[in-house]
Length: 564
Image (tube, rainbow, N blue to C red):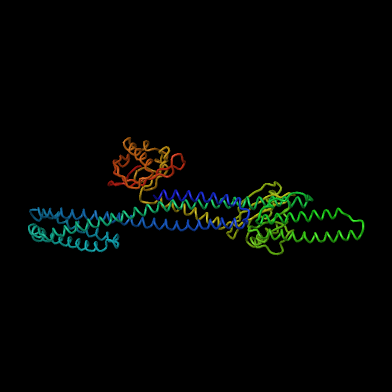
């Protein structure tokens, strides 16, 4: 049921993202800032869920390991105490059946030693006591102490008086009643520890679902990051390059060329309309210059008209400047010699440029200021030479730059007609930090899987070759990871065992998952015949590259060793 819910959730999320992509590509009524901020908001929400699920996953794993360890230790302790009680009873019978003190001495020594071991075993079990067994364990510990005191007195009577006196002391209803109560206590404790183990298994199931949710959220975060790059490229960088080329054509006298992106309703559209107004103003100026009036009055009138258009030109120029300054990214335009043609306020703020650096300054001056402020540590001359080389080659480029203050800047560079260069720069520090956090969480999950006490084995469902085993599985099988990975069961185990494993593979393919433990007896080539319990599930489906069988195996024999 949990796997079906996860698959349904992933399908709904994929459909939503596809609709979001189609909406952004066709929603010209949205501004660039609204598009970028919307995607960033979605990414922040997904990252928040990812962090919460990561914390929950770690908490579940910690609780599971503690509960599994305590239940296992307690179960082992109960078994050891039961065995020691039986050993004490056997030593007592040896005392009863001895004919003299000399023959009884070895049984008395053995009984005293078993009593000490029994007391130590009870004391070691105190570490596993919780609220659910505290009251029962308290009464159990008192009965154990009574049992030990009774057997010590039995030894004393046998050594100091006679074996007959020891038999008389041991043959009574109080002794038998105490034994009966001890057996009842042990059975009750075993039931409690079985319940703990069941709770640990439930936590393990919850942790698997949490891991699946983490994977899905990480995938959504990657898709949103890729979507952000697509929006920036299509909505900002490419459009700015088109408008820059149109501006260059107008500056060269081509006042009849079309200005692209006029239909857009965002910042790029406003910038395009400002350029169109600029083109119209320049065209009108050219027309006025061509109409030379023969008289001073006509000339004055033409000059007056030209002044008016110059005023409009300046106004449109300020509009263009305002549009550039309102961009959420930093922008700088250079000519063919790396002199600054234009820059917006976000670029100045990004590098904390002083007012002395304005249009007409050189890229070298900007870099020298960054060196003084600690934001650049490279060779200024080499960097300027590299930029001039890119301008000369006129090849668009995109790269990331790490500043000395820890910020990461994404830079998109495109050529302009006339030999110029436009660079759009965006601070992506938070995005890179989120990516590093995601990578750390993936490494943490890998460490957790590698160090769990249960054997975990992954197999390619298409060719039944082993893909991965953890340390616990290596120890159970008795072979190294290098000896197992890439091979099939028939290359590692006997025909009987390989047939059993392939039979279980077919069952898993039909059932999708086998979360209830299945117990089998197999022939391990290293450990011999072993009794193992395994739970299995499959990831993906037929025809998918990621179709995998995952097995969680536990060795139920006296030693370690298993295979799947």
